[in-house]
Image 1 (cartoon, one colour):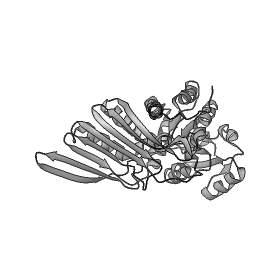
Image 2 (cartoon, rainbow, N blue to C red):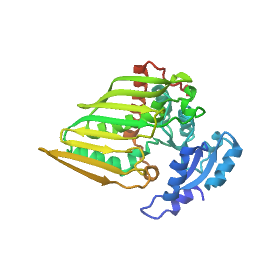
Image 3 (cartoon, rainbow, N blue to C red):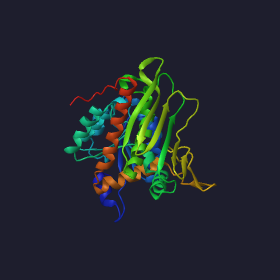
Length: 351
């Protein structure tokens, strides 16, 4: 069934399933596309990898209809509704740009680009492309974040005064591309971007700006250009923010704590609430302290993301607000690298 036939087959009030083409036979794609599409009913149409044999094996294992010989052939395929880019960081902007030039809609893994200049070069294609691009900050589609924003805006914890956000994980291994400077590696690129995006999401909801006050980094032993851990101090409105991110931590810690004048909110895993959907709400009244635990649901954030993108794609929504937040995230990443004395990641897109 072609994309046009799928659209025609949809019932009134329903969005037709997407035909998804995937660049890269990656592990993250198993969550973002393969598992998610099992729930959403979208079609895994094609996959391309650097090694065609690997693509064929991956397609057979994960139920894709077929493969394409290379990335260029896949992005040129007008039977596809959405191109998912799960390649190493340094290739994101280059292939997003090529897909947009071909008129495709793109879901690109974070980070959108290697640096702000490259982000702007890729995003310029949106001015003339029939397609659109979404950066895969899947956590923001989960009901957890909507509930956090609802409680903040409702004033339950009072005026926001302090924020602590952690994006910490153990070492992924020396051969992992996240340690590769030329592929835009580093903990800010892989993990810290989530923290910055979350701060900007909260700031936008409250009408507050996020600004960087300072940052320090420890570097990867095998390449001093690559950040292994970063601690940054920022300001969100009147709130002081501490951001810690590391790819050399003992355990996983993707937590968010928001302290206000009347209490606090705490999420043990704001990035993947499907693994821990608790939201701790603690408030004070005089000398009394009240604490409750809310459960916001263990449906995967990747499912919510894919459902939203299908709605926006089918209805022709071009979400410039989300794009602006992605750009601001990239801008803050560059600012943090500059503040730590580390070089910006090199981009590959030159026009």
